[in-house]
Length: 101
Image (tube, rainbow, N blue to C red; front, side, top):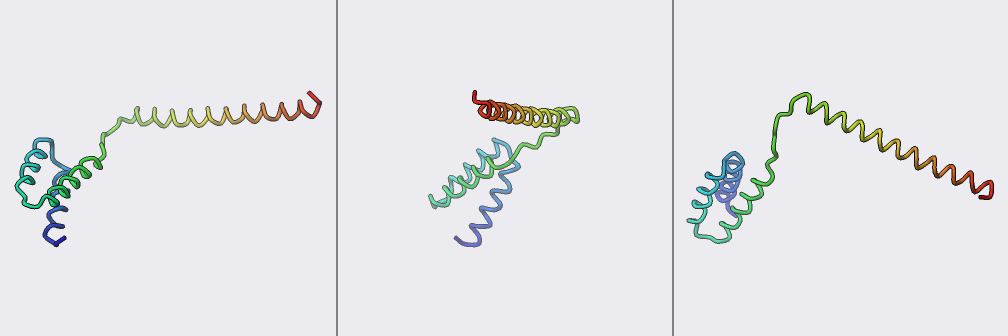
């Protein structure tokens, strides 16, 4: 792959991450005029990868963030309680075996 094609791929991936669907359609039309089928496939694969790898960065309010943190704390407490119950049952069974039941 030449340096020009690598630069084209890099520029295309950078541009694609910040554009909408209409711009994506226009970019695909631009790609369809390329002569090499392998170059078309590589550019489209890179475009799909760039579009799928961009994450959603939504700003959450402090109440939502606090609720998520609180839910995590509650879940950790629930798991800890389940472990305590399981160990208690295991210990009671061991004691019952010692007394022959």
